[in-house]
Length: 196
Image (cartoon, rainbow, N blue to C red; front, side, top):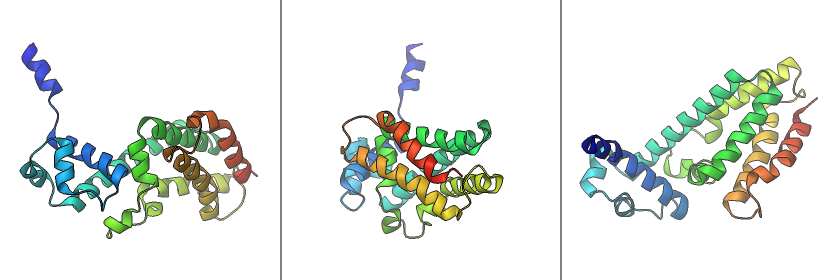
């Protein structure tokens, strides 16, 4: 019994490396973080890092892919369980606000990092699967008449621009209260910009 508990508590080196990199990239920035910094933070050997990753860019890429895939899965789940644009978009605002409070390093990596500076072969964030899904949700809402007739790019900017600015303010400690305090006002502003 004690032996199986130890196995359950054992941390996977790859996960520890990614967790350490996320923390350091968010706190110090990609270019100010070295593989040695990641090694120290993850408490693994340099050889262990290079066993899993070719270089620092490969660590950043793996981190980016994991976060984008997880975010895309969450948006798909929201799309599948909700019935209309109002419910979908409100649920996405709630998700992003909750992630900012509960996983601030993840949201910092999504919202604040300039990914193409250190992942030059990666498409812009706006062309990543979750953000393309968000555009699809906007297009469906416009076609059904639930959202105002406008270019989906403008609709997306109204939605994500407001959302990302509130997240940025929270991540920079520029807000006095947690994001859920601002949820109703944020959602009202977004919905007034998008509703017919």
